[in-house]
Amino acid sequence: MLANWIGILLGGFLAGQVSRRLGAPALIGMILWGILLGPQVSQWLSPALLEQAGSWRTLAVMVILVKAGLGLDREKLAQQGSVALRLGILPAACEALVVAIAAHYLLNFDWLTGLLLGCVIGAESPAVIVPGMLRLKQLGLGVRKGVPDAILTGSALSDVLLLLVFSLLLALLTPGDGQGWTLPGLGQINPWILLPFQVLLQVGWGAALGFVAARLLVRMLGQQRWTQTLPQDTLVTAAIALGLVLAAEQLPIFSGYLAVMALGYFVVELDAPLARRLRQGFDSLWAIAQIALFVLLGAGLPLTALVQLWQPGLLILILGTLVGRSLGWALSTWGSNWNWRERSFLLAGNSAKATVQAAIGGVPLAAGLPEGQSILAIAVLSIVLTAPLGAWAIPTFAPRLLSRDPVDPTQVSRDRPVRLLAAVDTSPLAIAVLLKAAELARRSEAEVVVLHVAQASDDRSLLALQEQIQRSFADIRYQFWLREGTIPETIDRCAQDWGADEIILGKHEQPHLPEVRLGSVSQTLLDVSTIPVILVEPVAADQTS
Image (cartoon, rainbow, N blue to C red; front, side, top):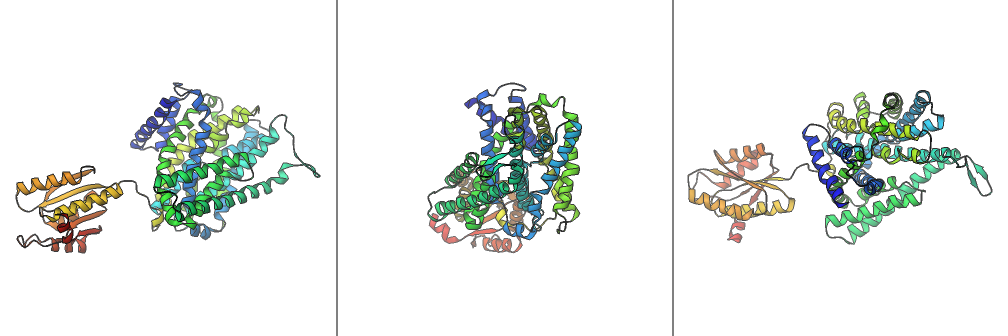
């Protein structure tokens, strides 16, 4: 099984990178790689691993929902009023109803079975939507009106609601189960009567337990400092969040997924510095978890089930989205300050389906429902079509439909290493500049360009400088650039061309070379450069000698 995991993680990563380089979302390559490894093609993955795929999907969904909670903004949610709440109810409910009607007339489903299919199809995929919305927040797209926050919160609430209704319908339709619940002293009660109370119970307890878990984390990790490193912080948080999800499976009085999302949200409210650290940790954890999620998702897709039902299934999906979900979007944003472009973006940003369908699509078949095979086939079709399409549509249409607003600094994460440009001459001060650049590079895992602007030919001094650079950056990725020209202008141009985040140079004058006075160089750069400049004082040079 260890070889299976090497194939899943390494192969899935490489397939995702190939897909990304071809201009497609990485998850497409991961899903295709899973199909190749799975029982539909090569049968390389062991049956025992595929049986455990549900547990690994649960772990991955937990990671992405914690990320979602850590990315929520209370002020933006309050600004939207009821829009996020309506997005959590109306689009999914309208889509489920339209799917039920379409399945009744196209597939001859009875009304309850059609609604069961609607609950499967109407759920939204956190694995696609959450990373997409968090990326928009980092870019400042739609953040002024809280569009990403409203979509994040609405998708989580809609999944909770649909999973509750799905469980209820499955209990009613499963052969041998009763058609109602019996309570002492009250007799048999129709479960539909208790549905609103179930929803309130699961949402209320989920939020409450998320708050308790967040308080525990803040006390352990923020106040008492039980951990010393970011991996330890991430491990403890992930274990507590996963415990909430597993506890919800045993005690279905609260929503485990809502609880872990609330955990992340309340950590932001209670301890923002801790939330920033955990956001970094879960970014790294998701980079691994998403590979397992989408590769196993592809391996578990029963593609043969699509042969007979792809045409009516496609029509049902189109009607559910363009009729049902569009009506829900219109009602959800009615009376809000969203313009037509922001409302149109919901088609791209709020339609993807993957994880929930993979988790529950096969349950009706396993429960013995005659329509179970058809439900599974349409669930698979929804994944194959909407997951890649949603992953592509969110970054493609967001810049065209959403306003570009000031970026919230608490939501910024880097997509590349920090870049430092160290400008050095051949004086003793160069040693101090190199040591400072190396120190900063090791702290932030940065890449470094060491720039020397030559003013006179001195091969011996240049050779000594290169030897010092090799010693200082022995364990750091660096490049050495030798350029000619006016010093301040050349430093600024090279920094701009390379996309440097900071410029590091020494501050002192050279009496023996009055035309190359670093004091004037540093002052000129401070005046003209748009990139932050770090000056190393002459005292530092004396201390390093």
